Length: 143
Image (cartoon, rainbow, N blue to C red; front, side, top):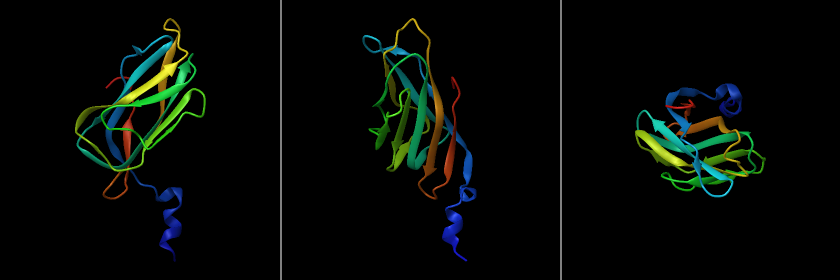
């Protein structure tokens, strides 16, 4: 019997309780046909993470998405290769204090302020550093 074989199966992934939430703040103009939207993370208690990632998508009009880091520093990886989508990941340990933290901004270009524009979370994932447990985050429109 090999313990390693079962660790690779999807059934072996244990999902923890919801430990907080991520949401978008209010749209901010950031130049000609460019807007930025703050991304906040609320932690119910201090989090000691092995990593954190999230993916967002564009609903409505707009061309490219970029990520501008804030309080937690620059991510290890930013993937904007798919038009209208953005994936951001911190692959090193990360300390998130209890309460609300501005993670950064999603910046969109090619946006007409009068047209419809919205961002949606495709997913948020994090792992606790102590035991690798997958932690869950709610993604409400507003906290």
